[in-house]
Image (cartoon, rainbow, N blue to C red):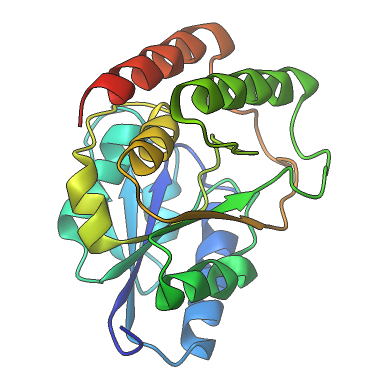
Length: 228
C-alpha cells in the first residue's frame, strides 16, 4: 500500500475565498510525501468563483451543476478516485492539510478509517451550539454501537478504498459524516481518532443548518444502525 495512489477529495460550495489556499497547502503536503496522488475538487453548484479559483491548480475538477449537498458531492468524488487510500477534507480552510500524513499513517498499520478529531484536545474551534449538538450525536452513537467517539461530524478523514466501497453510502448532505462513522463502527472496521489542528472559519458562516441537518443526522444514525 505504501506505493499506492492517495486520492484527496475536497467538496466545495461557495468557497472562493479559501479554496485556493486549501489547494495550495494540500499540493505542498502531497508533493512532500513523495507518493503518487490525485486531488479531486467537487464543486457543489457554487454561484461564486469557486470553480475558477480551483481550476488554477493541478486538480481534477468535477461539478454537480447545482447545489445538491455535501454527501452528494463526496459520493460523486468517490466514484472518480483511483487511490487505495482516500482522504477527505473541507474547503473552508478550517482543516490543516499538514495533518494528512498523520491520518494516513494508521492505514498502513491495520486501521481502516482514521478520523481527525477537533475535540480530543478540547480546543474551541466551533460554536457552543455545534459542539453541544456533536456531543449529543456522539452519545447516541455510543448507545447504539457501544463505541465512544469524540467527533462524529468531522469532515477530515482517511479511509481505505475497499472499506469505503462496503459502506454503501447514500447520504445527500452533512449527514454523510455520521453515516461513515456509524456504518464504519457497526460493520466492525478498525476505527481510530487522531487529534488535528483546526481553526474557526474566517470567511462566511457555516452552511450547516442546526435543526434541519440535525434531524437528517439523527435519521441517518437510526437507518445506518439497522441497514448495511
